[in-house]
Length: 199
Picture 1 (tube, rainbow, N blue to C red):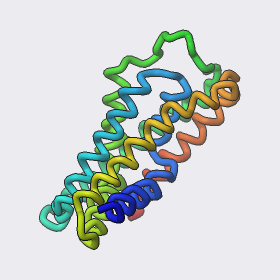
Picture 2: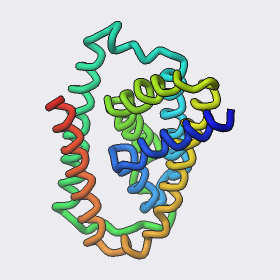
Picture 3: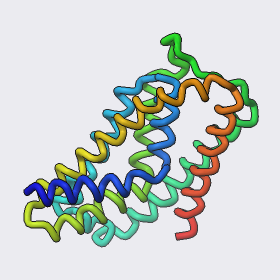
């Protein structure tokens, strides 16, 4: 059981470490200290749900419904292009600074909806959680423990990222730092969208 749990944790952590749409959004919310708990919880629970589906053996959805992959790919790419454009515009305009006085610039409702779109419209999330983790879990004697380990890795990573972002607060007290971050996020979103469209 411990081997399965540890293996699931390590695999999930290695898959999630690369900067992606979710990570960039959580980092931004953590730096701004806006709805960090709810953003991290939403990411963790979303990944845990997808991992559960994969470990339960329902990763064959794309084989049963070939149109599902295309829908997710083009829908996800469209959203990522739009989201990247928003960040590019923010980088172009500049002037953002780190707000720490407790006044949220973005409502919780809007933050969660954006995050859900970044998560559930991203085909790579399905490939990593449902397909990859689901198929690898079949190689372990205790699939449940493997899935629990993978879900724990996701939850712990997002909370570490969201709350650990505060350590970077002094850097992001300067508008120039936000322009760079927004530009990096925009480039990342567009790179992911391009990869989806060229698959």
